[in-house]
Amino acid sequence: MSHTEGASESPSSDIPESNAAPPRRSSVGRSVAAVVCLVLAALLVTPAAVAYWGQRTLNDEVRYIETVGPLVESPEVQDAIATKVTEAIQQQVDVEALLTTAFAELETEAPRVELLIGPMSGAVNGLIEREVRRFIASDEFADLWIRINSRAQQALHRILTGDNSGAVSLQGDQVVLDLDDVITLVKERLVERGLTVVEKVPIPETERQIVLMDAPQLRQARTIYAFSNPVAKWMLPVVGVLFLGAVLLARRRARMTVWVGAVIAANALLLGWTLSVGQQLFVNQLAGTTFGPASKVFYQTLLAYLERAQDAVLLLGLIIVVAGLFAGANRYGSAVRNAVSSTLVNAGTNIPTSQVSAVGRWIEANAGWLRVAVVALGVVVLVWGNQVTTGRVWWSLALVLVLLACLQVLIGAGRADKQAHSEPHPAVE
Image 1 (cartoon, rainbow, N blue to C red):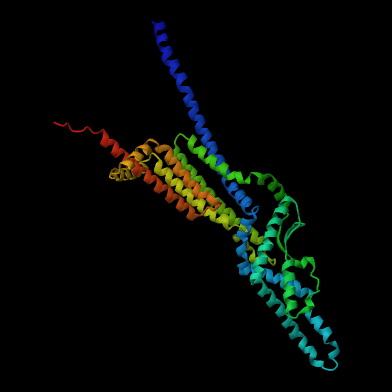
Image 2 (cartoon, helix red, strand yellow):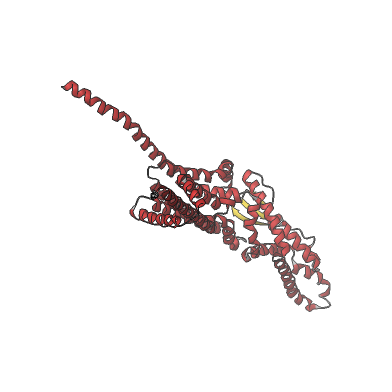
């Protein structure tokens, strides 16, 4: 009896265990892999965004010029450059001393002529300042600004790679901007106005530069740049693949989608906080320098693309959270999903065209991959041209929703046609 029971129990206990164990291990393994993908993506998304911005903005001369070009219209930047150029010329041209020397022979004949030296020197210095500011506000300087920044971008790249030549260079622990071209053109304009005394006045190298920042850690930045630059442009795609892998590997994909959206939104907030702290540190670093008053607008302009992307990524994360809730097996999501789907399908049943019905039957048979293709198309529209903005997010979302709605309507038309052909025809007597 016991032998018979043992024989009957052995198959029922051993076979199910051998069949059930691999799926359980596979399910646990997929869940762990999904969590690992999500955690890695969460850790990499903010560094990837900053690295991608740096690689696209600082390494791309066209993008860099498009970014910093508007600075030429900034009053703060114009004032900082005009102040530096004016001081450089006035410090080397002692107008009062020149006038004193020129009128020395007249003092015996006209003792009061020395009273004119002060007002005349002030007038000449005022002329220098007006000419400098007039030039800084001119179209000629705007063109020069583009050329200077084009060279500056190339020089910044050289700095990070160890080459110190160019308009922007590393001198000791300071990053400096060379204004030699600006001073030369201003001196030419002053000579044309009759102030020939400034033509041959040498301007020391230290007076022809603006210290942009003290950068004792720049040598470390060079090392980081050397390792990170080759992979910077691939970091964001890798993060996207990790997020996609987390969703595909998860047992509950809708819930994982919510988590992905939440992680993206949280990283957008983290990026915004990082940019805010970085701005304060940058402004503090330049406080008390000639460029100090323009430091804030310079920082905001240089990082404008990254700040716009941060707003767009925050919006995208919130949209993904809503999409995950809508697609989930929760009561509200299911109710809304069923109501919308039923409405669209019912609208499709009222389409009489037989060709549309045939297309609808094909779409219903291939609905799964077609919906994935629509979402993929929305992603392509979002990232096309590397200009991710909140407006682009809304347009991409609208495109996806409209196409998904069209698919559902056509599915309804296909079902109506299928039902019409499946109904029995009345018998003919």
